Length: 304
Image 1 (cartoon, helix red, strand yellow):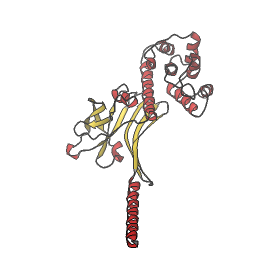
Image 2 (cartoon, rainbow, N blue to C red):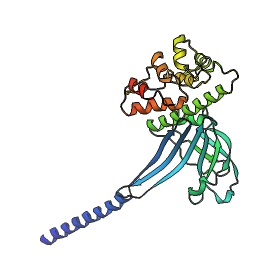
Image 3 (tube, rainbow, N blue to C red):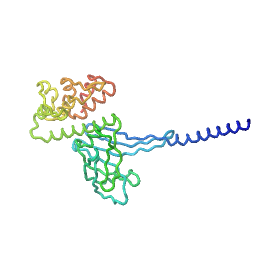
């Protein structure tokens, strides 16, 4: 009887050690991964990027790979996109490749892309980066911001595929993408206005015209408001662009993220703006630091 109990005890002890030894490798191998989007602007340039980050439990090691970047500026408002592709050595990639931008099931936009030798320097073995231009009103950006289906957006080479999942999983990531698109759209609005003839009252004319950020709706303003917005910059459309975006319902007015701009407050924010993007960015940053609307407007009156 005693021998049988000893045998059972040893067997249980062996099972315990086996279970413990089985858990340890699984814990060491556990990992988490996902895409991380980031948006940055200095008022004249905007940059959007997505990195695939993977971390390992109880380990300082991990991987961090840039999958895509997109850039736009006041002179070139259409984003220049650079994507990472896995290479198929059998496909013999060329300096120019046709890519499929896939944003929705059964839908792919064909673009011609150029091999970016400099950007490919850190791409890794059997990988390369290709760049192309993509308008902000494309389905690709729209689906990243507000996905209509459970579909993983990719950019693939037509001949061999090789694309990576470019999904934006969090609301914060999607907001970064939306902010980038809005910045590029403001650059485009400014460059198109600057190209129009007759600039003496460009600010007032633009202010009273259709608001691209509010479904092209037009509204009238008191002369006092027009004078406050345009001020000394009557020949520039920048104050009007700032005003249009501030009252579009898409720009936060307070710490709680609400967009409740009065015409008078928006006019104060945008008065004499030389650079709409810089003025709006300054205001958003001041809110992030805890400023009230009035404090943020006062702090940014000379920004941009």
